[in-house]
Image 1 (tube, rainbow, N blue to C red):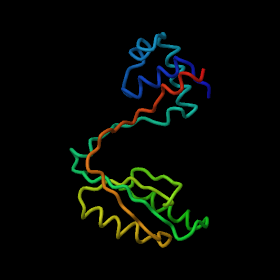
Image 2 (tube, rainbow, N blue to C red):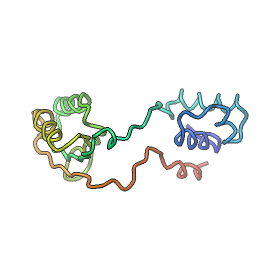
Image 3 (cartoon, rainbow, N blue to C red):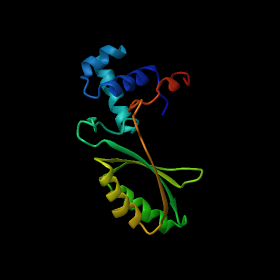
Length: 159
């Protein structure tokens, strides 16, 4: 989908405030409300905007352990990968899962209340998946940047 400066401005504003009213959004991006609303709906219908969510503070909720689990599988047969994918999708502790290049096959971002909860997840979930050969975990000591905003400035020069 080819985005113009108004589309990018709309995306930038709703990344900053997903609850912004259409009237305020239109004013900020320099459109009248009706065309702004049509553009926003178009971005949603084309799945450029995939959804809306409330961002929760994990530390205030007591979920203070951020772990990055690097996974190696026994093999890459379709059944093995499908079994691994199902286990990851059904696990609430896994926030993100990436198939990676390099030494490991996957990287998971895992959130836990404490080390005992992470150890339980590791032994009761990850190590119970027959396809998992090895898990190597790194723990975040402190987060230095946390954002959900995409780098829309990279799109501005494409038009």
